[in-house]
Length: 70
Image 1 (tube, rainbow, N blue to C red):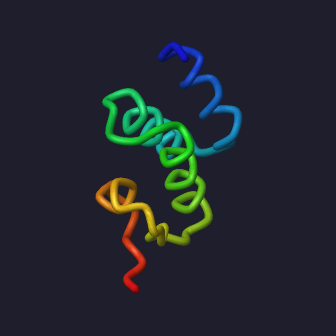
Image 2 (image 1 turned 30 degrees about the vertical axis):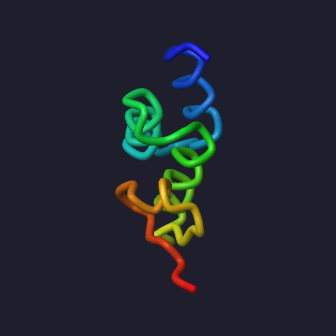
Image 3 (image 1 turned 45 degrees about the horizontal axis):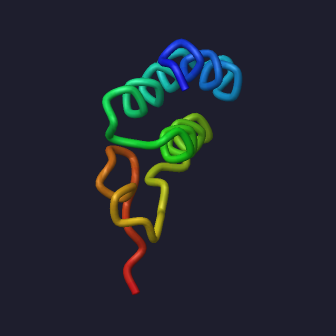
């Protein structure tokens, strides 16, 4: 997926919040997150529900996410 395609997809899903859209696109573009992780964190932020709790150790290292212990 090209950077332009990714940005368009993220902007479409994360509507009305340019800052969150850009943050998700940046995570995806720099390789820190895959598309799903970037979108999930952006949507959780948009809903005011950070951190995004996850069992995924790699995703838990991202800003806005935390790992579920147990």
